[in-house]
Amino acid sequence: MKKLSLLVISLLLIHSSMAQNYLDAIASDPTKMGWMKGFPPKKDSIISAIDGSFFEFPALRYSVCHMRQFFPSTVVRSAENNRFNFESALDKELDKVKFTPLGSKEDITWQESLMKVYTDGIIILHKGKIVYERYFGALKPNGVHTVMSVSKTFTGTLGALLIAEGVLVENKTAAEYVPELKSSAFGDATVRQILDMTTALQYSEDYADPNADVWIFSAAGNPFPKPPGYTGPQNYYEYLQTVKKSGNHGESFGYKTINTDAMGWIISRVTGKSIPELLSERIWEPLGTHVDGYYLVDGAGIAFAGGGLSANLRDLAMFGEMIRNNGFFNGKQILPSKVIDDIKVGGSQEAFEKAGYTNLKNWSYRNMWWITENENGAFSARGVHGQVIYIDPKAQMVIVRLASHPVAGNQANDPYSLPAYNALAKYFISKK
Image 1: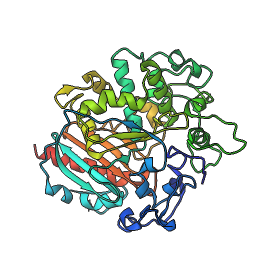
Image 2: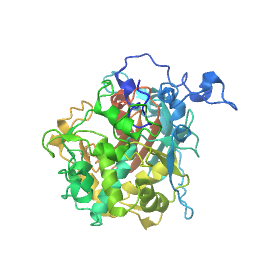
Image 3: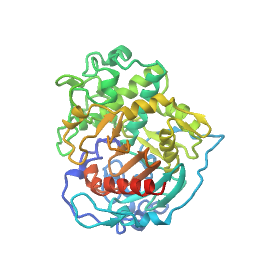
């Protein structure tokens, strides 16, 4: 395992290529493991970013709730005034909702599925009220949890907002906003192509390959001193300038994290604000959030837009409910409704199909949101190890799940998650 890593991408998916028998969710509960306990902690309970042990399972079940304990970070400020409080109408019947996991012939209940995907926190809203809320592992109600690639959706939503306001023009190229990207693969890619990840990049995120480009990106974002003899990029933005083109933009969907960091650079250049600052100003504070979030940063203080956000479960639910309500929340129009309309339009299903996601047939990708294209018009933000914000407009349902599954790729939890969300949607629709 590489040592040159932020949380970033370098350690995120390493587990997905390993066929192992992991401790189950109960046996791997971080409160039982005793990570980082004591003053100072005992040697056998210390986990570290220096040697990568902080993100090896089962230690990652502690780390996902304590990322700033291992890396430098910058705050996403919550609201000081007009904080929002959900009403609750808890539904005890939800635990009994049954569904059949993909590839299985036997039903399980919603309650049983939570431990299958190593849930740390789960909240379900129906018609804007909390109908279900549970916490496990190291996550507490007032705590935060890393959201991994759900971070991308916040960057994409900010990008869509700036397009709606005329600050960005979707058909302009990245180089028109950030001249430093002119000679890179992003130079002639449009804002729309970057937002929808239809860029043609010579870039591999194969974490099983020690020579994959992701490791170079990770090394650039490493906030700690570079090793002797290191001559590569010194930060995320320097790395983005080195990416080469492969093929034609706009033809195929390719889920590559560096698109989000390029988008983050464009956004910061046109607004004069970092992603954490802008997110706080335009979304987090207006929502009426209660808990400061934070982004991990590289050695130059650049926030990891593609996966560095940690946030509170209820605060994330506020964001999801705001999106479900077409931008209106906490007594105000936080985002123009046309931003949400544009997300719901979805992206090219033809381009998406070329990516070969077996569990995501007929889906698309738009503004860094995953669009199911199902009859309910559901769409979601997704992150490795089981992070999700799932919005089903027809069922008037929002689900936020934070998790620490030992396998990073969502193909490990989708067989449980996707049919479970559909079952819950049917349950709520039947209650109308």
